[in-house]
Image 1: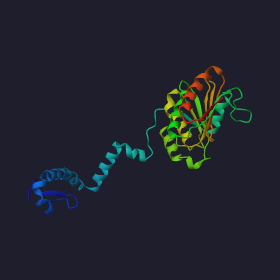
Image 2: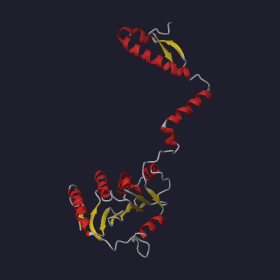
Image 3: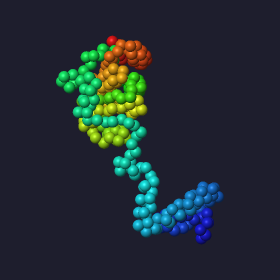
Image 4: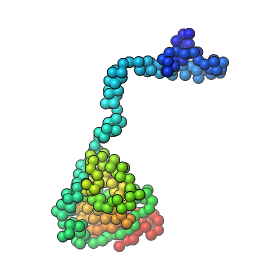
Length: 261
């Protein structure tokens, strides 16, 4: 039987040309086009399967060559490419030192807002889509800062709401492998706003607590694990912008989702 006969096919299990089963041959007049396509597909596969007869050493060499050009094996080995960010992720002591140098800690080493006045206090929306939108608004208040801080200081309280694997995977993309309890501080600039927005969104999703500090604006945003947000300012002149932005967001959602101070 000829290699190019439409009544034969390449069998991968035997690596030989085999006759088509009788059930295909009896239906040949009505299935010729389908069989022709199948024959062409099998012929193209034949060259690939034939190459599998190479020595095991050759296959190993080819496998290594392919893996080096494919990003997936690199990801599986934990060699992810670091995101384009200037963010510094710091431990608890460094976080408190950063705050102390800017007069944001009291004598007991806890965050202090005594020099600020409360601008707004409101409940965090329940809907995840609105939490995503809220994270964008919150970060927009700090998007011109050359240096600001996000401190995730409340976690592990509502464990059923958390996804630590997702969080750690995201921090890996920022070049950080340490767990959250070892390095809870994130010093960032305006160039890092996309990464900060994702971090704030995860705080809201996982019912965590955190603090955002903007020394340039004298702005403090406190996110509580009890699902409310309080914003403080040193200078009252920026208050109308913040209250108006958040008022529109809260009024567009469910009734009673926020309380303006």
